[in-house]
Length: 302
Image (cartoon, rainbow, N blue to C red):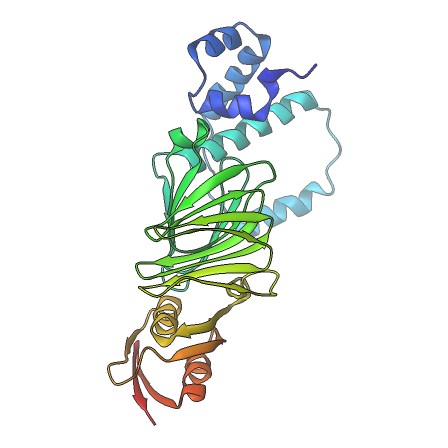
């Protein structure tokens, strides 16, 4: 029979002070509690050493000629210590006081959520969730910007934005949201998209988009993952306004587009690693010329 006191989920709840009083009293009576508590006490004295790359390399090289020594600590203690250290770092990182994670211009960030699901954030994006809600079953995140979610099988949670709500169960999907743009693409499994006007169910290869006051759009796509994960940003019949906003996020620039019709529809992709090439890719098909001065770009008609 499985010992619940050695289960990672139980230990994570204990380290996070989420056990009920009855569970804690019962746990303190076990031998596992005493052993784990010794390890916890020992980790309080850990101090990160100064890292000297050359010195470390020389020591590793020297170790290859050292004789084997007898282990003074059983293997299971090493495993337990590693498990506790991992749980401590995971709890601190994922359920600490700072529960908001964000990216700056041109940055991407990968996060592992408490249930093992993954979030990849695109530039100028953020996610926020409450630790207490997550562990009591109310797994809800707030997203601003763009994120690609890989939900662990059997796990479910909701992604909230000011434009709508996405509810998932063991799937992979991408959400892009800002005050006037909302888009969801389902890459695997099934997602439920809900906003003020309607509710839609998406399966693999289906998308949902709502732009400003226009009617929502449902479409299809064939990509296996978002292009921005490979360093490109793509759009399909999107108003130029949102294309330029994304360009500003990727390159930390300001674009003067006062002489351009921002309602022109753009279909295509631009690179996230070369500003001049990105501008050419966007502007050439639309007969727009551009000038770049430091972090300022001016667009005008040809």
